[in-house]
Length: 130
Image (tube, rainbow, N blue to C red; front, side, top):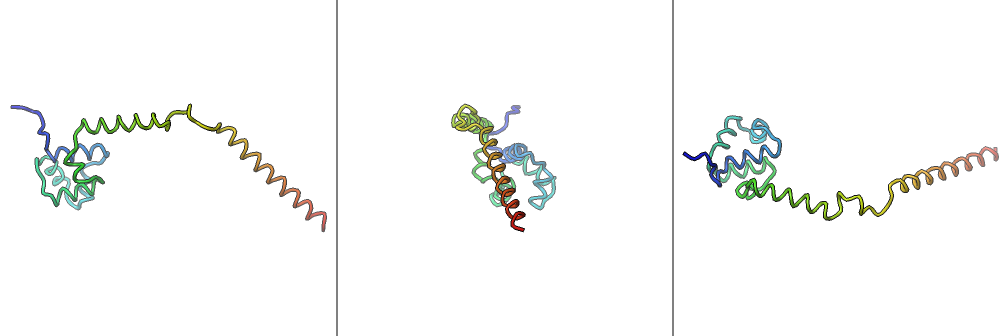
């Protein structure tokens, strides 16, 4: 007897998506207004009614199509492409920084000091007039 999972086992796909979202069965059950045992039964079911699948998808924050088309391989590819794109665009690459953050801090402090000097001059002027 084979222990391999069937590729279109909707319950297992729901279970894996729930786990990836770091959600416990109890939390999903509460979001759907059903018992944890019912969630367990759903996750062990090969097929699920469309109406229930829509409710589960909404509770998980994904589309029905995302559940139906979910595969571990697609998730790995998704995260790999996300990582590759973020570094390729310079998001995590400090070499592409167009300014020195310390220069900006110094500039800010110089403006603050100038503002304080202007306040002091104004207050001294008010005191001399009295």
